[in-house]
Image (cartoon, rainbow, N blue to C red; front, side):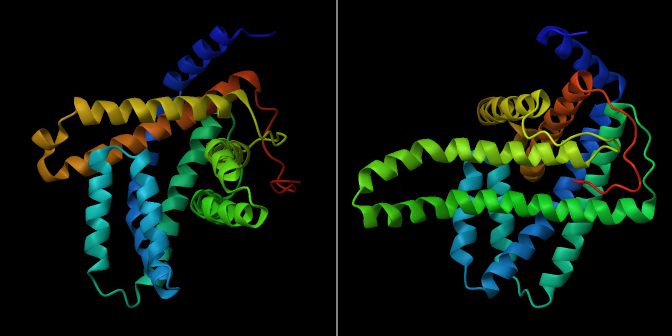
Length: 284
């Protein structure tokens, strides 16, 4: 039977609580935090070796717009400390640890999505572990592509505009278009997670009610959380020097809750039709 948006939200929230998704969100936020700093070391070392350190600085400035102030200050401080240390041999170690921690988080997502769709995990461990690593690398590539687009896009648009003599028009157009494109890339990332994560047979859907809800709620929640932390949440008085880390963990937790709630919305609208066939790989 067709469900009204209100019924979908009520059932999704009920399933979210019944499936104890808060616990999965906590686990996912922990794994994201664990993977973040090795990934930063990897990016710093790699870009430094390529002579592109300025690119990382621009990427960090972009992160300032998305993160709460305390979390950004923590990141900036840690990155400054990392840059002051010798990094010989850190490239391989940091990427291995980052991939391991992130893939562990991906397996948490896979388990949570199975709970959301009420299906059992039938993929054996020898297949599930490599898949989680492969999915992690693919999703990181999409996120990096989005960041590169945000940073390189204005420069490329400006060069194109200079050649056509349309500098002002193209610059204005880019100002309006870059955010919708970033939202579309974010939708793609979430759609891939919802498609690849659960052990179910389902068609790939770029836009779903769950993914749209997740993006909208995440943007609103991020803005609201940043405003709360900046104006009301004095975590430094409670946690001292750990305040920035607590804010970062809470930000990841809120993001994880939104991601898993969107999966519950999809599970209500598109129930699972059985586990994924062992003879079919994702995308076939």
